[in-house]
Length: 331
Image 1 (tube, rainbow, N blue to C red):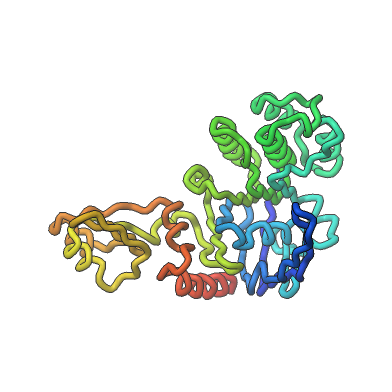
Image 2: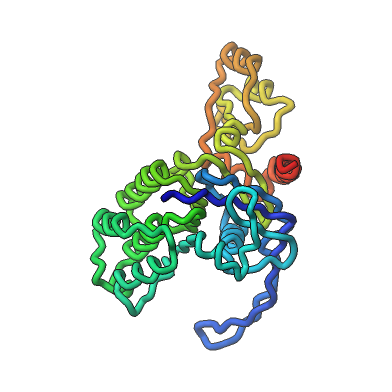
């Protein structure tokens, strides 16, 4: 049986944390000031698609995902998770938590128990757990189920966490930097397994990653967080059409770029490459061809980097536009 995929909705969500004291390696105590992890986040997450959750370190990705999994509560605003029109608050909600699988980089494993025992634990918690898939993935990742997590390398621990995320087949599956420590062949095997099992058993998958270039082929939707706010939330195809590059003689490129928002500029001698927001129109394409300027597409990772660059000219205004479109899209 394949359950209905879960969607989610956040309205004006704020998460603040207070000052904390921590002990340094030298034995002294340092007070870390409190701050705001999420600041007025309004967002709809479509059910039944793979959504990339992107953002720089400290952007609020893990905080956002932990709210959906009922690991935390918002300071302000509302969070709703569920299937169809039945959306409920996840906090202390057994129906939601039974149908949401959140896998963090640590894998949330029982260190003192064998991997096989951890799997029995999750099999009892997750109504759609597939033991056959779990066993096959352990073979794929070359993990012995009789070993304890403390006997595994960081990459193998991550692979166990990834196996739990896929084998749970939860209507909402959240994978937060779960690939960390995996070598390249294991990561690519993991990505292939996501696509294969998602095609056979559709559900909602949220995948946060810094390796945007590797995982962008998986994404149907993309959410970009920046400094605790939603910078962009849209289908991946739309995001990929948000930028392009012009490469050629400085004067010709500057003329073609006139009136467009510039995201990045790099110059080498008499040649310049400019990254611009938006998509080139027919006039720009014809003008570039006549001027000997090359028009290039912008990979998702490059656009993400440019839009979230500190001091980037496009970040603040783009965030305002994204917030407006997110609210309008719910009406």
